[in-house]
Amino acid sequence: MSNNERPSDSAASLDLVFSVLRKHEEALDKVARRLEDIADAISMVKEPAARPKVDVESISVERISDWKEFKERSSSAAKVLYEIGMSFIVRALMPTGRILKYSEHIFKTGLPLYSVGGGDSEDLQQKHTVKLECGLEFFLRRTESITKEGEYTQGILVSVDLNKINEWLADQLSVERSKIASGRVVI
Image (cartoon, one colour):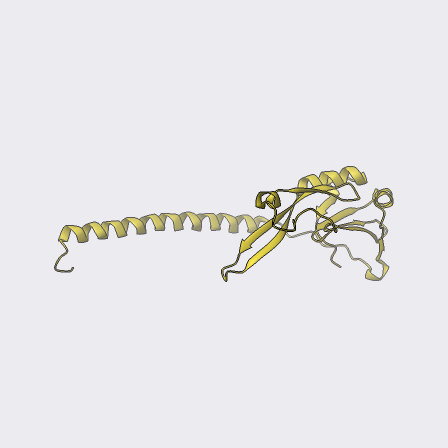
Protein backbone atom coordinates (compact mmCIF):
# COMPACT_ATOMS: atom_id res chain seq x y z
CA MET A 1 0.00 0.00 0.00
CA SER A 2 1.40 3.42 -0.89
CA ASN A 3 1.49 6.28 1.59
CA ASN A 4 -1.29 8.16 -0.27
CA GLU A 5 -3.63 5.16 -0.49
CA ARG A 6 -6.21 4.50 2.21
CA PRO A 7 -6.96 0.97 3.45
CA SER A 8 -10.55 1.20 2.15
CA ASP A 9 -9.27 1.94 -1.40
CA SER A 10 -7.06 -1.15 -1.29
CA ALA A 11 -9.93 -3.29 -0.04
CA ALA A 12 -12.23 -1.99 -2.79
CA SER A 13 -9.56 -2.74 -5.40
CA LEU A 14 -9.11 -6.28 -4.07
CA ASP A 15 -12.89 -6.81 -4.05
CA LEU A 16 -13.03 -5.74 -7.69
CA VAL A 17 -10.19 -8.12 -8.64
CA PHE A 18 -11.87 -11.02 -6.79
CA SER A 19 -15.21 -10.25 -8.41
CA VAL A 20 -13.67 -10.28 -11.89
CA LEU A 21 -11.82 -13.53 -11.11
CA ARG A 22 -15.07 -15.17 -9.91
CA LYS A 23 -16.83 -14.19 -13.14
CA HIS A 24 -13.97 -15.60 -15.21
CA GLU A 25 -14.05 -18.81 -13.18
CA GLU A 26 -17.79 -19.17 -13.82
CA ALA A 27 -17.28 -18.57 -17.54
CA LEU A 28 -14.48 -21.16 -17.65
CA ASP A 29 -16.70 -23.66 -15.81
CA LYS A 30 -19.40 -23.20 -18.47
CA VAL A 31 -16.85 -23.71 -21.25
CA ALA A 32 -15.47 -26.83 -19.53
CA ARG A 33 -19.00 -28.30 -19.22
CA ARG A 34 -19.70 -27.59 -22.88
CA LEU A 35 -16.42 -29.26 -23.90
CA GLU A 36 -17.32 -32.30 -21.78
CA ASP A 37 -20.74 -32.47 -23.47
CA ILE A 38 -19.09 -32.26 -26.89
CA ALA A 39 -16.57 -34.96 -25.95
CA ASP A 40 -19.43 -37.20 -24.76
CA ALA A 41 -21.33 -36.60 -28.00
CA ILE A 42 -18.26 -37.43 -30.07
CA SER A 43 -17.66 -40.65 -28.14
CA MET A 44 -21.24 -41.75 -28.88
CA VAL A 45 -20.78 -41.37 -32.63
CA LYS A 46 -20.68 -44.80 -34.18
CA GLU A 47 -17.86 -45.88 -36.37
CA PRO A 48 -18.70 -45.38 -40.05
CA ALA A 49 -19.78 -48.43 -41.95
CA ALA A 50 -17.03 -50.24 -43.77
CA ARG A 51 -16.51 -48.86 -47.25
CA PRO A 52 -17.25 -51.27 -50.05
CA LYS A 53 -14.23 -52.55 -51.91
CA VAL A 54 -13.95 -50.76 -55.23
CA ASP A 55 -11.82 -51.89 -58.10
CA VAL A 56 -10.06 -48.61 -58.88
CA GLU A 57 -9.13 -49.85 -62.34
CA SER A 58 -12.80 -50.23 -63.28
CA ILE A 59 -13.64 -46.62 -62.42
CA SER A 60 -13.80 -44.17 -65.28
CA VAL A 61 -14.72 -40.50 -65.39
CA GLU A 62 -16.75 -39.15 -68.27
CA ARG A 63 -16.92 -35.39 -68.67
CA ILE A 64 -20.21 -34.09 -70.02
CA SER A 65 -20.37 -30.44 -71.03
CA ASP A 66 -24.11 -30.28 -71.80
CA TRP A 67 -26.34 -29.98 -68.72
CA LYS A 68 -29.36 -31.54 -70.45
CA GLU A 69 -27.35 -34.65 -71.35
CA PHE A 70 -25.86 -34.79 -67.84
CA LYS A 71 -29.37 -34.61 -66.33
CA GLU A 72 -30.66 -37.44 -68.49
CA ARG A 73 -27.72 -39.74 -67.83
CA SER A 74 -27.49 -39.03 -64.07
CA SER A 75 -31.04 -39.98 -63.12
CA SER A 76 -29.98 -43.43 -61.87
CA ALA A 77 -26.99 -42.14 -59.85
CA ALA A 78 -26.17 -43.92 -56.60
CA LYS A 79 -24.74 -40.67 -55.20
CA VAL A 80 -24.38 -37.08 -56.44
CA LEU A 81 -21.60 -34.89 -55.09
CA TYR A 82 -21.03 -31.24 -55.90
CA GLU A 83 -18.61 -28.49 -55.03
CA ILE A 84 -18.56 -24.76 -55.51
CA GLY A 85 -15.38 -22.74 -55.89
CA MET A 86 -14.17 -21.09 -59.05
CA SER A 87 -16.47 -23.57 -60.80
CA PHE A 88 -19.69 -25.42 -60.05
CA ILE A 89 -18.80 -29.11 -60.33
CA VAL A 90 -21.28 -31.98 -60.12
CA ARG A 91 -20.24 -35.63 -60.11
CA ALA A 92 -22.76 -38.43 -60.42
CA LEU A 93 -21.52 -41.79 -59.14
CA MET A 94 -23.23 -44.40 -61.23
CA PRO A 95 -23.93 -47.98 -60.06
CA THR A 96 -21.63 -49.26 -62.82
CA GLY A 97 -18.58 -47.57 -61.26
CA ARG A 98 -18.56 -44.82 -63.85
CA ILE A 99 -18.46 -41.21 -62.70
CA LEU A 100 -20.22 -38.58 -64.77
CA LYS A 101 -18.84 -35.07 -64.32
CA TYR A 102 -20.34 -31.72 -65.23
CA SER A 103 -18.54 -28.46 -64.54
CA GLU A 104 -19.18 -24.84 -65.31
CA HIS A 105 -17.04 -21.80 -64.53
CA ILE A 106 -18.69 -19.36 -62.15
CA PHE A 107 -16.49 -16.37 -62.90
CA LYS A 108 -17.02 -15.33 -66.49
CA THR A 109 -15.89 -12.23 -68.31
CA GLY A 110 -18.34 -9.36 -68.22
CA LEU A 111 -19.46 -10.02 -64.67
CA PRO A 112 -20.68 -6.62 -63.34
CA LEU A 113 -18.73 -6.58 -60.06
CA TYR A 114 -16.22 -3.84 -60.72
CA SER A 115 -16.66 -0.40 -62.18
CA VAL A 116 -13.90 1.47 -63.95
CA GLY A 117 -13.26 5.07 -62.97
CA GLY A 118 -14.35 4.89 -59.32
CA GLY A 119 -18.07 4.29 -59.32
CA ASP A 120 -20.31 4.59 -56.31
CA SER A 121 -18.93 2.39 -53.51
CA GLU A 122 -22.46 1.37 -52.48
CA ASP A 123 -23.05 0.05 -56.00
CA LEU A 124 -19.91 -2.08 -55.76
CA GLN A 125 -21.06 -3.69 -52.51
CA GLN A 126 -24.43 -4.93 -53.69
CA LYS A 127 -25.08 -8.55 -54.57
CA HIS A 128 -25.14 -9.60 -58.19
CA THR A 129 -27.27 -12.52 -59.29
CA VAL A 130 -25.44 -15.07 -61.39
CA LYS A 131 -27.29 -17.66 -63.41
CA LEU A 132 -25.23 -20.52 -64.78
CA GLU A 133 -26.00 -22.23 -68.07
CA CYS A 134 -27.33 -25.22 -66.12
CA GLY A 135 -29.93 -22.89 -64.54
CA LEU A 136 -28.51 -22.63 -61.00
CA GLU A 137 -28.75 -19.12 -59.55
CA PHE A 138 -26.84 -17.59 -56.66
CA PHE A 139 -25.27 -14.31 -55.57
CA LEU A 140 -21.78 -12.88 -55.86
CA ARG A 141 -20.63 -9.90 -53.85
CA ARG A 142 -17.40 -7.94 -53.97
CA THR A 143 -15.59 -7.55 -50.65
CA GLU A 144 -12.92 -5.08 -49.63
CA SER A 145 -10.68 -5.08 -46.57
CA ILE A 146 -7.43 -3.75 -45.20
CA THR A 147 -4.98 -6.22 -43.68
CA LYS A 148 -3.07 -5.68 -40.44
CA GLU A 149 -0.13 -4.64 -42.57
CA GLY A 150 -2.25 -1.91 -44.15
CA GLU A 151 -2.60 -3.62 -47.54
CA TYR A 152 -5.87 -3.17 -49.43
CA THR A 153 -7.43 -6.45 -50.60
CA GLN A 154 -10.45 -7.30 -52.70
CA GLY A 155 -12.33 -10.52 -53.07
CA ILE A 156 -15.55 -12.03 -54.27
CA LEU A 157 -17.96 -13.88 -52.00
CA VAL A 158 -20.11 -16.61 -53.46
CA SER A 159 -23.35 -16.63 -51.48
CA VAL A 160 -25.08 -20.01 -51.65
CA ASP A 161 -27.54 -21.99 -49.58
CA LEU A 162 -26.41 -25.63 -49.69
CA ASN A 163 -29.89 -26.89 -48.80
CA LYS A 164 -31.34 -25.04 -51.79
CA ILE A 165 -28.63 -26.47 -54.05
CA ASN A 166 -29.39 -29.98 -52.75
CA GLU A 167 -33.09 -29.48 -53.46
CA TRP A 168 -32.37 -27.96 -56.88
CA LEU A 169 -30.11 -30.89 -57.85
CA ALA A 170 -32.63 -33.45 -56.57
CA ASP A 171 -35.30 -31.83 -58.73
CA GLN A 172 -33.08 -31.37 -61.79
CA LEU A 173 -31.57 -34.88 -61.75
CA SER A 174 -34.66 -36.72 -60.47
CA VAL A 175 -32.54 -38.22 -57.69
CA GLU A 176 -33.55 -38.67 -54.05
CA ARG A 177 -32.47 -35.77 -51.85
CA SER A 178 -30.65 -38.19 -49.51
CA LYS A 179 -28.28 -39.15 -52.34
CA ILE A 180 -27.00 -35.58 -52.80
CA ALA A 181 -24.18 -34.01 -50.81
CA SER A 182 -21.58 -31.29 -51.01
CA GLY A 183 -18.19 -32.97 -51.32
CA ARG A 184 -15.57 -34.60 -53.48
CA VAL A 185 -14.94 -38.10 -54.75
CA VAL A 186 -11.94 -39.62 -52.99
CA ILE A 187 -10.62 -42.99 -54.12
